[in-house]
Length: 291
Image 1: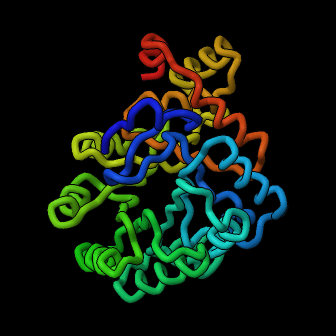
Image 2: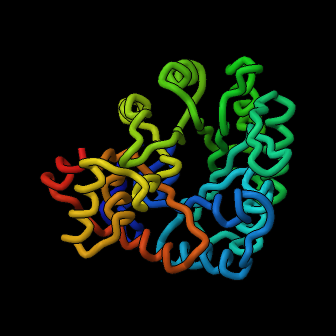
């Protein structure tokens, strides 16, 4: 991954980076998980607002939208296509397969080759795409050899159905193993100001030039966490006349040049607040206070 010329950064929230050597996107993306119903299950309570959020994200320069077959299930992908297709030039739709949703609150791993192929082909239909720009293994399946799952994604890539392959919910050893055999361009793990358990994976992504997409990027920023870091977050937010969530986003952007936060929301107002956070540049002292 490399940094584009300054001209390509214009109007992209947080600037721009290039995924996989050929896919420039804004450093602040949009996670489309919460466009579905409560518990990430069923239709959204306000479908019209969900569509407004997607349209407004693109208007604001967000050109990386992350979704998954399991969000709804199927509903997030369908809403994206219904709202944005034909997709504006440069907009990247990333999706994931490997989790089944047999019922609310159930997230069952299923990374069998036949299941991944069915999932990818279903996503292609729902998203109205001939090729998915970034297709991610949602989670390794302990019942399936990791290489079997990766091999299926590589086969789909060779068939022209996937442009780039990403991983999600992996450890450092799994990532290194994958990189020895496959061309991986991104990792999506849980990561935020208050949960840095994937710091080692983030370091490996920086070393290998991979995008890092933190899920739950704002956990703890809405007055759920405690301690010195919470106090520093609130103090900096007050001084900046910003929200703690905006400071949490700014911290992620400053944490690594490989970071692409993908905060999600079902509200246009919250979306606009999140995108505005990309203009906040924290000082070295502020970053030290949040360490």
